[in-house]
Length: 176
Image 1: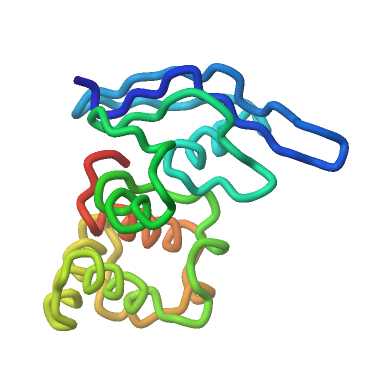
Image 2: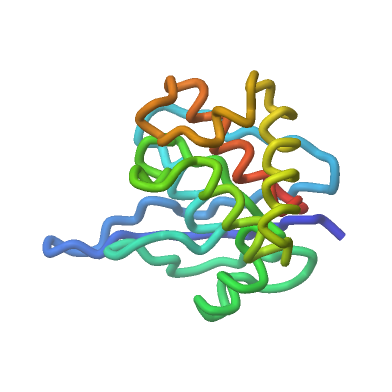
């Protein structure tokens, strides 16, 4: 059984002028350990595909057809609360394209990472801090202890992107 199976995924944006079909029949399978890349020009639907799969598509966008199955479980049929509690971060995680928009500007990156570890993995503050240092080291950020005390605007674009990768990896998802 594939880890992820997407069949005939159709996503539309509902505008004043009418329905705009953005995805029309996207199908793919990802086996455990397999790497799949979506390649295309700007506006071709790569991000909309990812947002549709993980259930993060915002209005006016909506999945209008097809199936998204994670180890046989239909993700399109799940309620938002189920996606949030059981799927996002734990089973599927995503590295967002723009870390400046995804990171909270008024909370240190270390606190953002430790909050995820405390909430999603049930770690104590001390355990979460140690795990955060380990994860940040794994993405080749030097001096992780001091970097975790930084706010997003204090990091270079590449450094912020590596923090996003750390956040995505922090809950050890099956699919990234």
